[in-house]
Length: 120
Image (cartoon, rainbow, N blue to C red; front, side, top):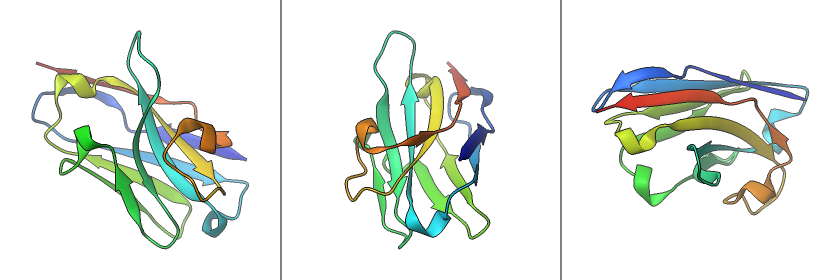
C-alpha cells in the first residue's frame, strides 16, 4: 500500500493550494480517506475526511475554506482556500477501513506528508 501526497508549497495568506494524494495497493472503495496536519511543536490534528459514499467531515478551523474530494482513479484531494498563517503545517493523507474516521488512531495507512507554508 502506498499513499503519496503532493501539492504543498509556499503561499501568501488569502491564497489557495490544492493537495493531492495518489493511492495504490488497496481497494479504494473499501476505504475512507482523511487529511491530517502537524505544525512544528504541535500534535497531529484532524483536518478532513471523506467516505466512499461521499460523506465529508471537517475540523472547525477549516470549515468553509477547505474542500475534500476523491475520484475513481484512487486520488484524494484537498482544496484549500483563504489560507491563513495558522494553516502552516505538514499535511498527511491517510486511509482507513474503520467506521470511526476522525482521529489519527483510526487510520492504518499514511502518506509521507507535504509541507504547506502560509506567509502573512
